[in-house]
Image (cartoon, rainbow, N blue to C red; front, side, top):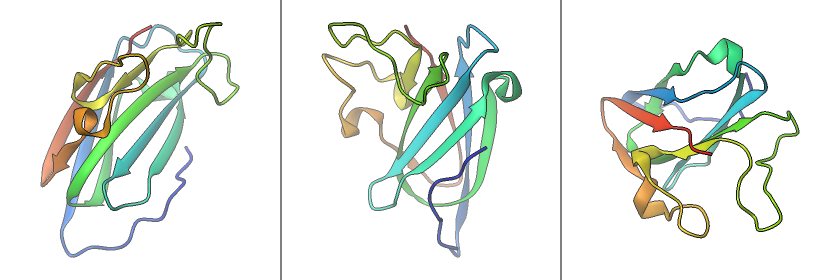
Length: 125
């Protein structure tokens, strides 16, 4: 697991549970990125086999967050795309936001983390 951003200690800490649906294979890695409106982003990479579709992050500061997930089947650290830039690997976003000629806008994926929150993310291909 890789944690790519420091998180400052806060007086009030929250918990984010994420359930990833439609993981089609135990092969490759699943990369998650979280971005707060005023926070640095957090990036995690877990093997699909170890992930089993669910995990929890504790001690996050309250605020607005967005989540994007990709299943890196090829293990190259990128979301592979075809010649017209359509993704060839599964991906998904918080709030079940759908892309429209590119990734969804911040307003479509953001949610308020305040207490214990859960996001369910369906991977699409």
